[in-house]
Image: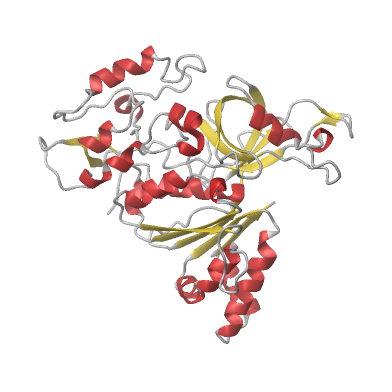
Length: 414
């Protein structure tokens, strides 16, 4: 079925009313706890619902005027709730309707969100040598205090015309001068964690998933501030309104398959979840052509040290409960709390090895597999997959070349 920008989609009113910070919906209304008019009036009164920045900076445009469709709760909820964040539509999925209800039956009819569907693969809006100014709108901690380190979800407002697609990356140039070179700091590349519409759904923001880089002195057990990551600490400490220099977007390695019937397998450690969050919001949350055409299986394997270090678990749980033509499976490898079959710590490569038959069958049927995270993850993964191939009587070197030749193999590590 082909969708166009004028394609009408149907949503149950309970699902629609769960999305809080949307200015205006032209909906068919039945009884609801709070009318859409009241919701609309409350947004500008609160400065776009986000008191920490000037009014309007995160305000969603009128969908009827901009061709957008609201599909997530307020960004303030995302930033202030941190790891306790819950999607409003978790409670509404039981009464959701995809396309069968009729007018007057408690269903809101909306145009598909499609105004950024024809971007192609954008080239750099700005080069690192000539970056542009962006503004931090807010950030929120993603992991529990007992989890090691600090990981922040950072939302940034981009200059007008700066667009990207899922799977691309963005460079941030931290302020100041590098004391070692007496020159401006070099750009740091970050995988983008939001879809092309951004978490605000107005197409003007980008979200990053950033781990604070710290070095602990083994002698003292304390953080050595002289060796901290300049850019990651800048982003993890940034206050709303902070300006920064950005460049990009770049990247073609991690793009989603063009065929919406192609299975995808995503393997991440830590903040390597970023591009996969953008994938899954694209395929299971936003009301776009991509979501309604996706009819395949998506499998996410995420490795973290402890449960409190899981990233975006509530979002992924909500996606699994939301009716969709495609299916989503999420597998966690929590190394300090779970064991592999040999009794050792469970890592992402153990999950792949334990699901060897399913994994190889999917790849042989054209599935695309993506890896993102620290480069140290890849040797263990490759070793595990090689053993899987040997056990099946296959030559792993030959199979890997086949996957790469077919553009099924995608790696972005750092």
